[in-house]
Amino acid sequence: MLEIKQNGAVLQFVGELNCNTVVAHWPFKLMATLPKQAEFDLSGLQHVDTAGLAWLIQQMAKAKQLGISLKFKKMPEQLRSLASVSDVLALLPTE
Amino acid sequence: MQQFLVTGGATLKGDVTISGAKNAALPILFATILAEQPSVISNVPVLRDIDTTFKLLAIFGAEVQRDGHQVTVDASHIHSQMAPYELVRTMRASILALGPLLARFGHAEVSLPGGCAIGARPVNLHIEGLRKMGAQITVENGYIKAKAERLKGAHIVMDMVSVTGTENLLMAAVLADGVTTIENAAREPEVVDLATYLTAMGAKITGAGSATIKVEGVERLIGAAHRVLPDRIETGTFLVAAAVTGGDVTCRNTDPGELEVVLEKLREAGADVTTGDDWIRLDMTGRQLKSVNVKTTPHPGFPTDMQAQFTVLNVLAEGVGVVTETIFENRFMHVPELQRMGALIQLEGNNALCQHTTQLTGAQVMATDLRASASLVIAGLVANGNTIVDRIYHIDRGYEQIEHKLQALGAKIERINAPA
Image (cartoon, rainbow over all chains, first blue to last red; front, side, top):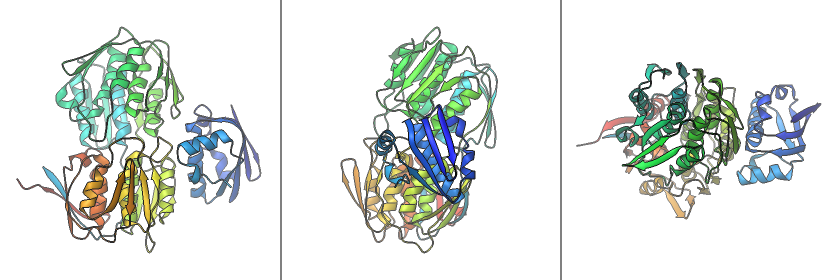
């Protein structure tokens, strides 16, 4: 289960971002509604798998395409570890 | 034997249309065996391995009709389940016939593929997985002989991540009796593309793109239409070629989202990279190439199939870049060839330390595998003088009309016959 709540420029992700939940968010239409400075608040994510990580990377790409400066905030440790294993942690737009 | 004659010095400029991904098209073409009705597959690249697959499908009794990049496969009259050595030895991916033949017909014989230049890619992962699904498998006279009345759902933990292993087991599981779970599965986009096609055929699959794939077997599948995803590695290869020649190239018919990690490395290397829904532009005009460290990892990390190209990029860039290969144990065979062109590269275990090399010089070099070949062509594009790349059958396996595409961008490259 994944819930995405929009609060202005911030999208708050709650639940699981994995192969089962990302399917419903492809294409991710909310991205087009975001202003030029936007944030993903990832603190509510309980579990992320590699499909979820790939989805986040795809959203980074989409944000660049749309001219949106996107930040990932409050990344859970599990996601950080997964990104580190995949050697993509440095690429993620974290603070 | 054919060769490429590459004359260095051209700056690549213009648009290039990216082909469908061979690594997605091959398993999808084999998966057409699973249905009793025709399937229509589009965006299929024109490549030698694809032709070999057509020959295999024809030997099995399938009717294959090709119209440009669209292929119709009718597997309703399959009469043979045997993939002979003569074809399998030319294409390791022939092993992908095993799963679908066994799943639909209850028996299959596929010749064991030969050795592989880039390291051990054992087929025992395929065999062990199928055994867990109830198949009786023997290896006799160089052939894998498999039979099962109907495969049964199983819990399979793969010892190592294998793309073809995952695909073979996925194709077997869709017609098995019960639920199959594949753990430590490959997560590459090409696996997801296969799952998408199988789902369109009526398969029940969840988890594709993650390390755990679940398949609920069904009695039968139906034919379906599917468009093969664009080749992300061909895209990356042209972008690196544009970067090292100081060019400005737009790749069309591609998917930027699947290549973001590579694009980030190109941006880090100093390139101006912009994207649209189905295009990527790399502009290196007036910019300085900077070295980057890359480490290959399974998807969504940096793909091993882009490692050789980035080795060349680092040689030509300012600074020192380290390329770390973690997927295959013997995938630096392009390095001695690049060193013959003057590249300053030091190999230490699975690391290649690349130092800035002021000028590569043309030389006669030998392609050793698909991506290594591409790296040698890229090196030839910037080398002083002529580079002759031998054994280009490797590059023909994975790049559709690469010399024509490069010529259209301004490169000086031609296919020649080697002297007798």
